[in-house]
Length: 204
View 1 (cartoon, rainbow, N blue to C red):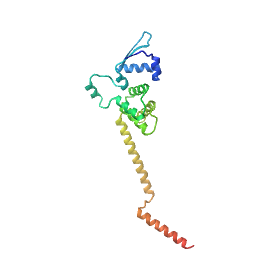
View 2 (view 1 turned 30 degrees about the vertical axis):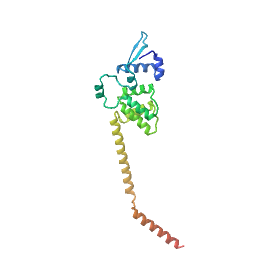
View 3 (view 1 turned 90 degrees about the horizontal axis):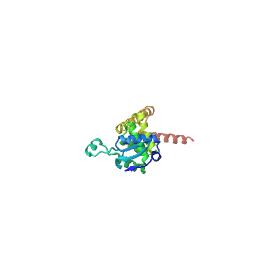
View 4 (view 1 turned 90 degrees about the vertical axis):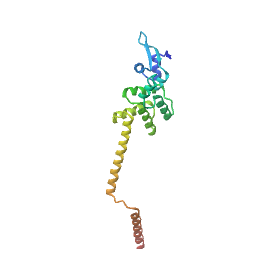
């Protein structure tokens, strides 16, 4: 497949600047997703994708299936994109895939963590746009140094433990301040109150 699109058209489609498009092309070329050449004026005159799967999935084309499986213990990117689309109910646009790929290249986050960010946004009723998801990932990394799914799991486990500790501490304070009645004591207290009320009414 050879594209005759201009840089301007590509930038418009991806919603990137032409500089960002050039950086993306270089990134994809380095990862053997595509090849491109420039004319004498420095403009892109040819773009050739290695294969459509590589463009869509963000994976690197490799004829050696066994070696590829060794390098990818998790499900491949295409399956993650499909699972993300099931969560959002929308098809990921090319510019969204490009933004996700650029974020992964910049931060080293994996697609499994990207998927977890979509799950988190969905569970909290937040926006599931690519930009918002990337914002979640950046916040996780900045605030808690979360780089992997394991880091994320540890973070939430520790967060839950801290909640339990705080709850236990507050409960202890309450118990120390207040005498907690048993059910039998509550019944006895109610009887005494009713008896005292009846006695008071009898006086009048």
